[in-house]
Image (cartoon, rainbow, N blue to C red; front, side):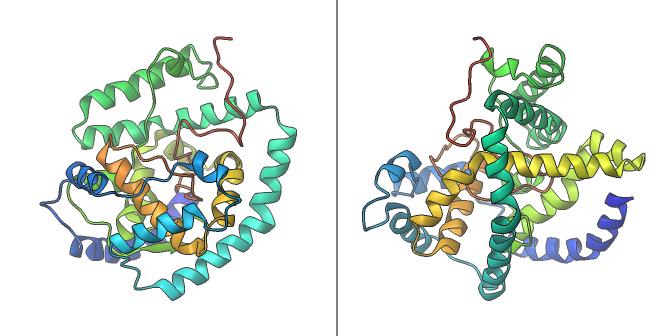
Length: 312
């Protein structure tokens, strides 16, 4: 079976990565306090709308602000040469496969259909989010996740319609990498993974290894050898995620002097904001395909098209 074979290959590597992560653990650190302190100190939050309006200027606003952010924080990228090689490899894959497919998807699939597909895939990730909410001791957020899943699965026709958001019950994202961060496990060194993109040992272990055990649908599909469905879901999630950010991602690439460094800084800011559960940074999206390929931002636009209200 796909998952069992895959997990057997990465199991020993995951243990080694975990040891490395624990070496960077900071048990006394409070991520909420850290995020607040960084914000007060002028920690960078890029407003992509403003960046888009200024993209014609010679001094790229995104690249200059991200360079300042990278100077503020420890780069901690000992594998930079290898990471840059993998980063360029991922870029080639995106140019050959993801960008053309995403362009075709955005131009030929109605926005309402795309929104329904995204809602359905988001709903499938609810068990993973729910378990991590509980592990973090966030009972209120766990109830919110459960309520959203129940409403959208029943009234929302299996999650195709995001009825919960229309009722004011907004979604959020959680994974085991965030759970480890809440308990003081440091991110460790920066990693770029083939296909999946920006990461670090903590997030790689949390998403790639642990979260798969919190996904009952994925476990059932794997145990019943429904490989075609597994591959289809992975492809659908990847296309849906990338197609929704491709235009903004291209803009970041155009306005960055060092695209690799810009993505690295964006990823770290994004993860810190997610772990703090409340410090929202207005950041442009990055090619951060999670390991189950679920979208990272529930409120992200669908390729510069405003999402229609379900109440209309």
